[in-house]
Image 1 (cartoon, rainbow, N blue to C red):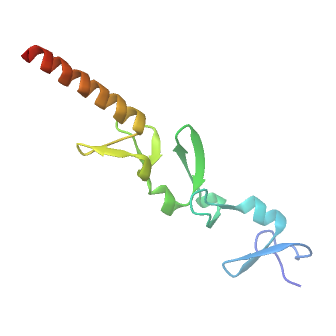
Image 2 (image 1 turned 90 degrees about the vertical axis):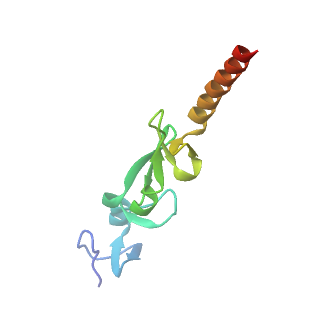
Length: 114
């Protein structure tokens, strides 16, 4: 009978094969998870936790590289959700606030010219 690669016990019930090893249901659940971005199986020890707005998500190292921080608020966002302006990365809220301030400054400049 085959043994679990995690605990060494004989496999009697449900098991899962991963990277040529077989794990019992308990070891599988305790040691592996899915990346919350790409759904690939990852050893829990290899998961990286990144903030997605106000929520922390567990992702693989490849997906973790796709996250960056907003220049203003330092919150972590997926690169697709960041807006690059003058070489800096901003979340939508900070970008909108910065542009609102710029628009107000431009309006004041226009008023001064009149």
